[in-house]
Length: 330
Image (cartoon, rainbow, N blue to C red):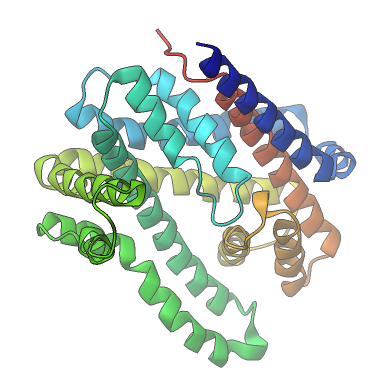
């Protein structure tokens, strides 16, 4: 009991320190100045739109869980997904890191085995990547067509080829799972051959192998749920594109749809940089994007600050929820 309380207090302290660090490094004064450019109605609509987007993100995960575990309710998952987002947002890299927390919530609160909970998170992440990579492929085409990089278009097109091949991975992985092929398991078994059977790493690899096989079973047994979850993931991106276009309209930025899509693509690419919360890279990406289309750099800064306010609000709330521990919602 004492150990559990110690771990909970330590978790709260670490998450609080992380939240303080993020807020200390965020340009809060500039964020407030940018928010003053918006009306209360516009801010209210952006908050409502982001709430809807997050509900759709949770819906995708719930559809996957609901197919095989009907005792997992929807509403508590929103809080769990927020907590996972909070950890992922402040983790260096492409916004991953909160997935183990999702697994722990399912295992502790609803009795799912680690393997089954992990397989549900793997499927959720695969569908998220599939929608993300589909958007990036369309967005990169918009970057080329919009003339954002006209000075080096040929070199950029050549650089896109390996990236576009990478973007096919989620769709290919799901297709292989449907065909009873398990590529991650095949790769991990090569590492297993060189590990002691009882080592912690070997047990982790076995868990991932079992989880991928369970994900494959889900694809084959619950094709309808898979398609519905994919539909929810695509709706998330429709909402995110609409939100970005709406923010441009609020700040009176004169960009057509193709230019807006190219600019949003640069934003998403900025989060692939190894910086927690995309600090610095988000702001630089938006200044670059708008100036490439002949608009003032101040507009790019206002856009990035508006997005920063949104992400800090959601990510900060997620960290606070994560700090509350694993109490089951009734």
